[in-house]
Length: 425
Image (cartoon, rainbow, N blue to C red):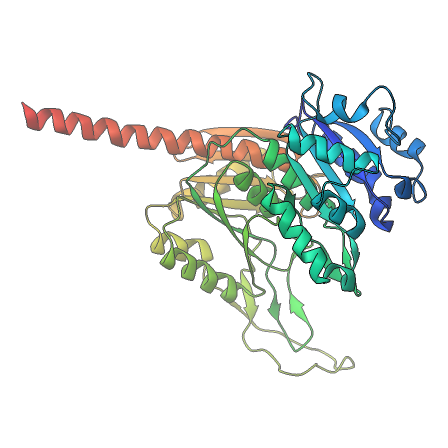
């Protein structure tokens, strides 16, 4: 199971510190998700946490012994001190109001708080993920203590406010932040990236609409990858089911017009280096929308459709210097036909790169966790990315984009040097 999604955390050791919140039930899943990206996970539990989930469960989930008390083996030092086998990061998830306040004032009366104190002293990164009732979270002292933790360099991943509770952040958000902190690959630092993702909806009446099954997972994976590599990322996101990453700017849209307007507004305000149109945008919309619900008993209902403007064409006109990447989804076509149609779109839309896939293939459709794609560059070279998790596909796509981007910049620099040399002769 280790490394089944990626190897980005390979060689990294993570102390998962669990406290007495009911959100502790999420910890086996958090541990497993970190392990799927290559990490080794070591659980540390407060006495209150052991009343909610069994240490045996966490030992099963991580494959490592669980620290529930500190002994003569000085587990806090071997885990989070100046020790050759110390962890790379300490993740306190969930963190109760009690534990947050203890950490803020250096009170070490549980294995969790002692490990955190040791990590701070050893300059090991610490991430705290609060979870409690909303009224507790908004207590002035708790808010003050969270600021105190941040002042010590501790990262806080804020909660979700739902049903009167400050619930633990989404697991994907927690994992993405840990990866970002531990990742050393910042080859996109300084680049601005705009991504469109998810489906769009075109309304027939007040409640019915035309759409497609896009989950937005590919667009979200691309946004996560770009942010992970140091880019400044904006995601224009239709009503997909995938949760956008916390560390990117997200603009929520619903219709194709809203997506187009948002994209043009962004490229008008900011000079983007890379623009990726990964959204499954509707090609047609009803000629007119009924502003009320059409009665369900109506017979022989006919809907006239009109073509919609191509978002990618408008973006190319508005951002002629951006490295523009399009997506081409087909259904049930041969590999040759898929590539042929993608190349046609590459030429017609004046793209720098296009990503083509057949959504009829098993485990590679709209809502799947994986994808198989063909990436075609400006010179019409075809790069095949075999069936892989969409996060891995996103990483490979950016590898190819950067190869093209840097090659293009090197060519421009070379031409400028040649020109300067000629002028000096």
